Length: 381
Image (cartoon, rainbow, N blue to C red; front, side):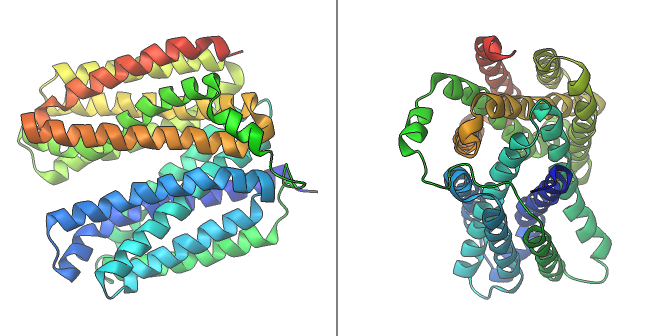
């Protein structure tokens, strides 16, 4: 018999590992490029391998978890992340670096999806709140890695720190190996026909389209606001990066609050509140021309982004509990496609018309997200 609290906090540790690992590339990319004397095109290809790996990991982990359980999957994911981080630190040719990045993406993507599915499985009646708390650990991991690199920069180079942090993943593997997880849902055979039907399920696809645009909005904010602020306000990169810092801090703080709010208020009301913050953030971003107002916009966006994913993942867990792992895989794949396609589109727009068009694309995505939100409201109970 498994202990729900122990399993939940183990999932949180795994989510922290995911947050730390996916930020790893961005934190050390300049050093990797300099080490191998590569240009910006090669760096862009390397950066594109990470979301591709996350997509692959997210696609296959759900059916695996439904058939075989979570314990072996978590261990495999952590092993892939460990190998990937050590590959980044010690790889002596570009091909090894590319493989290492893919392994981090695949392991991290599978860990993210499966940890969310596991928490949904063991949190009946409070899925949204528990998934919000789980999301906090992603934020702490994502914020923690740059802080650790900065703190140790006077003593070690970044790649050596990555090697040390990679070694700590061994502790996570030992933790996962030492506890009891819920039994697999379909030990006698995976229901392939049901899984195929789920791919065509209109409810799941509708919920997925909300997260398609939500993920796209998050990607636009993370990848493009730094350059937008520098270009539009003529500020240095350090000052522009403060925007992303306050954005992530607002997102993480709201995830903490959601752990309590979702126990007292209806999920649909919280969802619309979060969407309201997204709309406010996009409008302020579009209409303002001062640094402080742009920071306020990024805070609003962080607060708004915090709630949509946990609430919708909780809803998916409620509606598709018999094959939750597969359902979560489908929903994350749709969301990742949104992130990749919308950000690719922003790249084309920036090339043709300039990065100043970013607020317009944010507004368009927000409108479409609102339309799908309105269409999905009937599924909230």
